[in-house]
Length: 266
Image 1 (cartoon, rainbow, N blue to C red):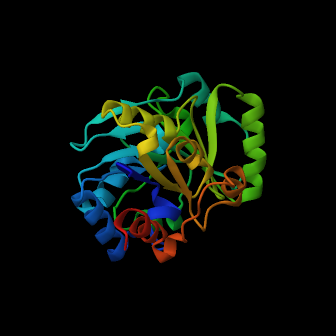
Image 2 (cartoon, helix red, strand yellow):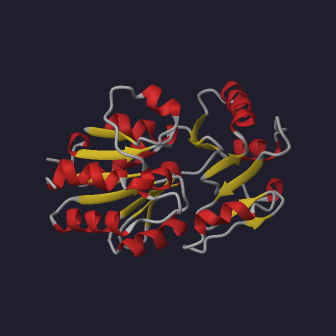
């Protein structure tokens, strides 16, 4: 029925310990063995996600940095969309509504931040991916895939409003988690990247099923033939896509359980 399964990682395929459970790994391997293609679509960096893909033991496409970067099964970057350099410089210098907001940058090669955030390295404990603390205003602005701002939700809402007013029609802006606001070049999103991959393989979007939990999954879930919202998804996503089916929560193998019932008849 569906030729492709696409999944976000944090809050979706990964459990709350940031792992792919043995049960989920088993279900995905069975689907791929039966001919279903599997694609990861995440806000994470492609270097970080390679380790997760290797743990799955699958040769798959990776849509990373919210669609700004796509790598093929041979780890070759086949798509790389960066922010306009002038806007990137402005973002690195702009005053923030709360001094506790941490500013982060992904380039194709690395993760940079303006402060130490050891608690967030827990997300990358198994992959070893780590940030470099630096003065972000001095970085080369010609190769930035995304900014992301980490803080409590309320100050990020204020920042979101400021960015939407200042850069209307110039940037893609979305929450991946309540504590993470992401900023990419205009038109960059997971849905656009997935559409490009499927077009290369002559697979219609109607033949794909996708899972997600954040507003950065909105386009992807809206475009595919069968979008599924996680039970633990951000309330804003649930309200934006009220008619889409719901999976269980990520910490109880929600993706694997849904796929078993829909595609494996188990």
